[in-house]
Figure 1 (tube, rainbow, N blue to C red):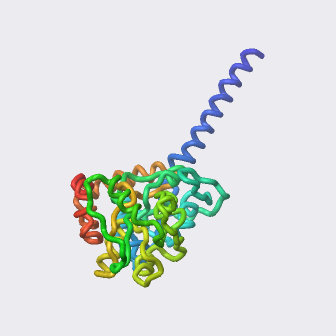
Figure 2 (tube, rainbow, N blue to C red; figure 1 turned 180 degrees about the vertical axis):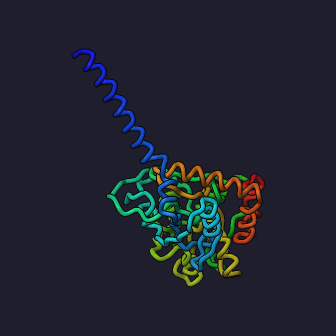
Figure 3 (cartoon, rainbow, N blue to C red; figure 1 turned 60 degrees about the horizontal axis):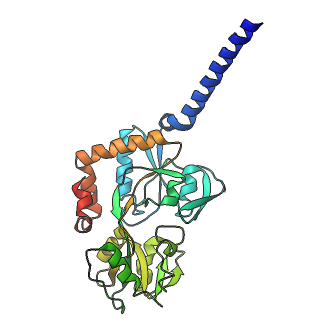
Length: 298
């Protein structure tokens, strides 16, 4: 009986180990195989600046289309919203709380990756994995061209520049967007005395709202601000920065580490063969003036 017991124990332990390994592989290492079985790579996007134009093209659209070809998959674009995009990827409805998140429940998974000028934020990193940075950014304050707010003179010290912008905001209306990188609470604008207007329309409509007099000023990410300056010349002006340099990346579910790794390898290839810089020049030709160091490394 003693020998039989030992033999049974070893077999049982071995079986449990196999089950655990299979479970781990299913949870963490086989997502690309599941996608290949489906035959479609689902790109979650939101029309924003020139990353996703809404007209079937954009820098992120072209890059993900090529990534799908790289994986020998069909490409499918799935439009979502800033409110729903995290849940559409990871299956969890979340609400940011500073740099943390609150899980509100489960929702259906609709896509395999987010690519839409998606800024890397601490709270998002709690529930998502990011690729290597794909684009530099920053939060700028923009204003109507005839606003009393005057653009600062860069000091060479970003903290001093941010402080100089904030000192002008007391009593000024400023548009922001809750639960995004444009959330004023992340930037301390209320403490600076700004009157916050939370924007509920599409982010692409912020610059027109400022031009139309809905607010004297607004927060914009650099890529969106560059597009707005080009699209409405002489209608808006940049006052200065309200954040340190930030970065955008493509987001993947925590269970899709293999897909994220595959994209990183693909992106490095695109950088080496020059395709990545071709896309940047096509969709953001003026960004090199503001972030030369980032693009020199590409």
